[in-house]
Amino acid sequence: DIQMTQSPSSLSASVGDRVTITCRASQGITNYLAWYQQKPGKVPKLLIYGASTLQSGVPSRFSGSGSGTDFTLAISSLQPEDAATYYCQKYNSAPRTFGPGTKVDIK
Amino acid sequence: QVQLQQWGAGLLKPSETLSLTCAVYGGSFSGYYWSWIRQPPGKGLEWIGEINHSGLTNYNPSLKSRVTMSVDTSKNQFSLELSSVTAADTAVYYCARGGDGVTYHSDCWGQGTLVTVSS
Image 1 (cartoon, rainbow over the protein chains, first blue to last red):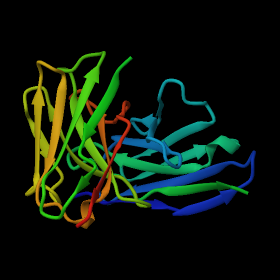
Image 2 (image 1 turned 180 degrees about the vertical axis):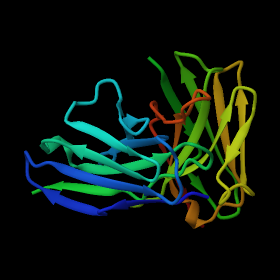
Image 3 (image 1 turned 30 degrees about the horizontal axis):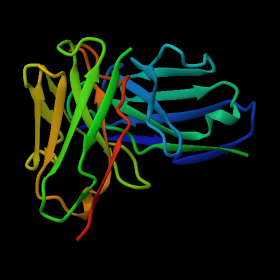
């Protein structure tokens, strides 16, 4: 099975900073990658699918890039409401494995 | 607007069978795969498996021997059974809309059900 890793596992940044999170697949998955945001006690929310397509209603400060094995989620200008844990998920084939998550805190 | 509502027993004893059901309101039921995902307290998300309207399933190999998913198209519902539970199965369980056969991201989620396994 394909394994997913994320880096960093956590980060702390200031409001207005540009933040990037990396997701890596152990084998190529073309662009079959999604990103989710989960706030404490809440249901995960789809942010991006197809590695770079923004889900309807998601702020444009979020963007995704990459293909093959290396992917990036970027937040162009971090906002207080972006404090959350972010997960990538590969879905080219089953099992549709999630990455371990990256926790983003606001300084 | 698709909505998923899930229910099931929240407290189980070791060796019992976990049973959860998820109802889908609005949108197409037959056009999608329907997924179960879990999250142990303080930990990350784990994909359990998926089922489509015809009953075709894909399971996580790590749970495959204990998982059964079923679907009731007359009620737009799908269900999860996980047998022989242990404390390691304690988690919030989510149902979610999976893929349409082309792409398999989950854009709609149920509210989650905390299942605790304790003697």
